[in-house]
Image (cartoon, rainbow, N blue to C red; front, top):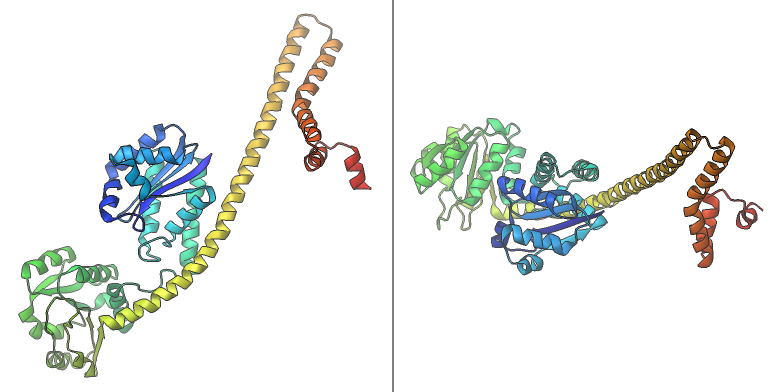
Length: 424
């Protein structure tokens, strides 16, 4: 059996192609069923996310045939798939799935979502009946490795996007973040990402202010948030502990005087402000106010760069963990193969014995002499069991393979000249 991995991801293909090879929940079931019927595929798992589509199979399937299957299933030119894909076999495939599940192969180094996505892909395959003993062991071991990477390294500890860094900073300033009120100024992609991080942290009171009210309302509906117009911000600013702004305005929307008046109404309770816009949405002079904590996109970018360096160091530690755990899995697999060989060898011997015993019993029933039958049984059984080792010894001698000869001599417990010399 050969373990194969075929994939297309953000490093090898543009979004347009990644969209074409992605599997929907419905098509995933059909794909797993198709692979199960495909000649040479014994086990299969398909991981499909916005950044990657990867197919893991265990069997005797050549890589070229797997590429053809993927091209045929999505009706894409096979040369397009070939030129934008990557392929791994055996230990390289094991290393790859462990790196993927640990977040080491992600667009954002160390991102945690991929772990859950790989786990879901495994569960989908299990429900589709495409998981047997080897993939069960491989993926359960992979999940254990990914958890160990998370707990023993700092791979996911630090923010590596300005949106996430803004929320993490807010947590440092306000210990009980869910109880705080947040004003989001703007309704673009950056603010949407900030809002998602805030909701993940349990923040309940969020208000969205935007020049286009309809856009603000659309975002607010997804957050169960309130809406303000930009003209309402000066009068309402004092009611927010955290203000995060990212608009396309060419002039500042929040000035020093506006924040100063808000702080007086707050009786000098601190206010945390984050300006993610370029040009700035918040006047830099706000930093002169004692109870206002203003961070710009440059401040956060510096934090992100430091955190990325930290994650890269953690990634090196994670790679060492993965390398050691590949050996653990490979050793287990080799042990299983040895057990299988022993089982096959013993079963083969038992079958030979049973056939000869049955023949002997039939001869006894026919009235043949017992002594003659026993001698014949012993002779035939001995010849049958000795046939394989005898042929191996003869071949080793013919090829002058002293290492194999010594090994066979030791294994068969022979008292030949070679063993006598070793004992001497």
